[in-house]
Image (cartoon, rainbow, N blue to C red; front, side):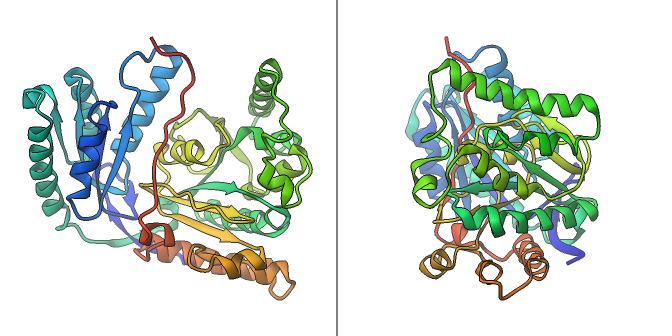
Length: 385
């Protein structure tokens, strides 16, 4: 468990997969991107539908996320299609600077003929995959890993066992020189003082509290009652009573190490260690924030079951609920129910989960990958023109 087999990239990062990304930079070419990706083996398709009209902070965050996705270390190449040549050129320049092989094709290049776009895209994607197939895995240290920490459709077993289990793994990863990221800001509410107490500086502690207060204030201003929104009706039906109770379990995913900094949505960590990301709690947006920040893997706990996974980063599903583990044994990647039943010490399970993480980093498929699940959803932060 001291290392894994990965793909070493030109910028020094290490990928755990070697996939082609077919990226639609704009919604108009989204259907064409799906058609291209479906014709190419092991290609992932991501559509960024909001290409036009973005302004201010929303545009800056969207551009950062687009570059993070297009130059992700799990990619051996990227094929970009779009309807705005200027935007394609700008994004292509950023991707090239990071060393990711790419091809970019605009609708304008094809005389606005979608059949021609699909044909050209298919040929360009095939050439990229041919070159990607020459790459080989090589040993890499745990310090090369960045892991996002997520939970979804939680129940009491999540906070009691599964999330603290992720915390043990996060501690081990950080101790080895790696990086872990905790998100879901509204799920710090009621436990933010515990995170703030682990901040490297007083300024960071204040920033963590302020991030939670902004989310809470936004809910109040919109007349939203968090009870029923977060925790969700599924959380409540499975036994969680309040956002504070859910937060105490959710923040346990972060382990016990000092927090190095507060990241914006999709912002890459500046150094190894434990980081927190100020981001939406909804899993599709949250996972994409981690992936855009460079996370090669996601650890995702669930109580009653949650099938959502990232398209670019293998998502390791973990549950400690014995009934869920029995019912979803073809969807969960790690069964932690023995700790919930008192049959195994959490520390022993943490070693097993870290081993599973390394196996998946080295090429073992997650159930989500096998079943062809996966998507990426970049958050929106404002109105469009």
